[in-house]
Image (cartoon, rainbow, N blue to C red; front, side, top):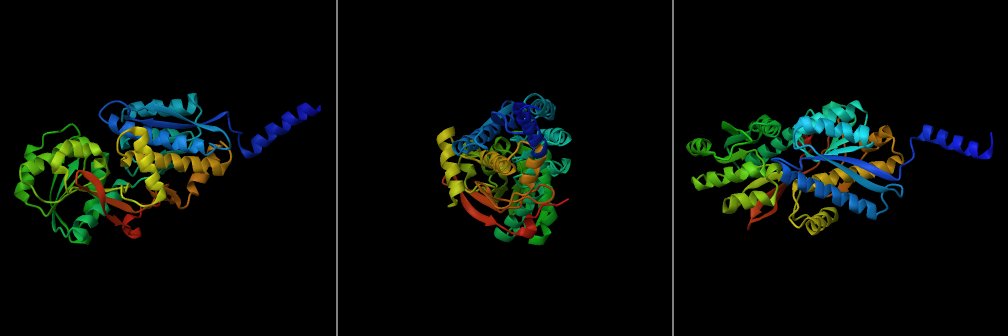
Length: 382
């Protein structure tokens, strides 16, 4: 064996023992709804992810290699998310993927990544089954039921409501939130007097509004996205319903305020992003995002930014592009400071962090309060 052959053999042996060496660029897969009904959220998520990649590359990338974000549009549809996930893994060779999408498409893609033993992070999809896909799947946002529990505390303990009406969006998002709220309502002295359901296609809510008026509740817990919540809140207020309205992270966009108009004033939501935070990570994110995007930061953007930060930190720690090593580095993440809080994972790949309550005041999202109760907010661990 000559000297050059020996060096080549040694290099191959080292890679076999420690994981493969980095390619010229490090690829992170990303799926988001860039077309269809959720395109606005997809745009925010993608912009947040791109910002995180730009910042990481400015800091030297990963082991001196440039990070490349490989993006596919999933339309917020499972049947588009599955082929996108397969392309990311098989065609593009990503060693980690991130979902900037909704629960249905995230659940579908998560199983593809799990079956391939490639790490996958859900940025903001909330369905409980996502992390139950397997040990390669993580989530950096709240589960729906956890956020619903926080909503019960906000309604009963913090707002003093006794009678609450639920208005529930009939999808993974709405059902999970409602389940969490109802599971803890009685603990905070809340009685759910009625629950009304609607479809994601609905924009006219006359029959529901009439029933809520007749119920005369102390507060309303209404799940939805900005494009459903905006019309709903506007119609409730137009018909004289004055009860406090509690929403969730689906409202968390300036577009909700644009659609609801003056009716948005006073609406409170549970979310991950505090616009009035004094923490450097959050302040820097908000300023940098708005400069890049040309519009206000929202929860979706902050969550995608967070997920990329977690992925980059794990790959730097792993020091290899071996998916198993990256997965172990993600699982070992403790107290990573990001725009949405401090990230640590439990055994199921779920995160525990404080809930940021925001209120519309003067036509802007502003700080209302914080819910930081470890027992209340604890996600399942298995």
